[in-house]
Amino acid sequence: MRLTNSTDHALRLLLIVYEADGRLVTIEQAAQRFSLSRANLMKVANELTSDGVLTGIRGRSGGLRLARPASEIRIGDVVRAMETDFALVECLGEANDCAIAGICRLPRVFRRARQAFMDVLDATTLADVALRPTTASAPESAPAASSAITGDLTSGEIDVTYNGMNTPDSRPYDSPLRRAQADATRDRILQALADVLDTTGGDEIMFDEIAKAAGVERRTVFRHFPNKTELLRAFWVWIGARIGPQILPATLADLLAMPPEIFAGFDAHENVIRASLHSPSGRAMRQEAVPARRQSFARIVDAGLHDLSATQRHEFQALAHLLFSATAWETLKDYAGLSGQDAGKTVSRALTLLMTALRSESRGATLTAKGED
Image (cartoon, rainbow, N blue to C red; front, side):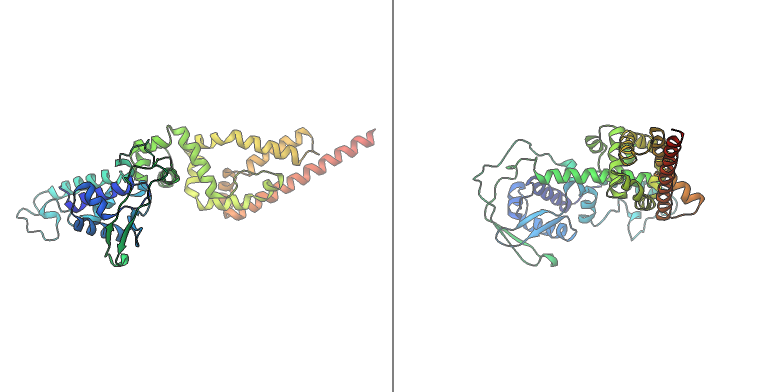
């Protein structure tokens, strides 16, 4: 399969816009840089703008910039936007007059080959294919870009005239934009892991599977998460932030009040939470959080129930771990038919009753001891 010049020009234009690191790029600049037709680039820019890949800014200081982070722009989507015919052979097209149609299985083979081709492009982003210098920096006195865009962007008519611009590689790459792009890629990978857990149950986490779901290369996943432990640790924090603004209690009042909200969050991510309970990867992920959980529970119980004996505090802490958990949520949901919020209310009530009973027991023991004296 040979891609058309339109796709070639689109990819070149995207690379130079990405290389500019957030500064506006004009059609004229791109045309001069790559010795391409200004008219052809104009058509390509119109198409990419209509598809939400580029943003066109009108005015004397206007130009083009990426509409979303380069890590979210898949090469496959660009190719689909620019190509009009993916029929590798006649029998894959709308008009099929092949003389041997119906007596061979080549169409199925060609479809698989085409899908494999697109799978590779879908797994690659603009950020993956761009080579950008990392040491150049712009002089403080560098002049601002000056350009003009006329026409109606919504109708696809863009006219860009060039009046001078700094070279695209004149800014450092440890910029807020680059940081935002890296954060977006990281979030995309973690969302892909959530999707994989949601679909497969998390029996085994494969980096290739996560990379495909995220639309990035395998090496991109490893660049953000060098090993499975780092990936699972980051994911537990990530999913916790989506379950609730606070996943671990900070005070005794939090411990008693948070279960309804947290358990409702478990409902919203049911398959992922169940995978964390019943898959090897999920158990490993939860084990990573155990030390911090133990420390948090011990601190708030010692501070909030200091009137109890050490044995009573230990008993309350142990039962709090049992009740304030995804295991309790699942049991109450499956066995008692409770929603997450109702299950959380039940847990809150149980913890409150337990605390009251232990305090009553403690006061009774104190009175008995005084009577014996």
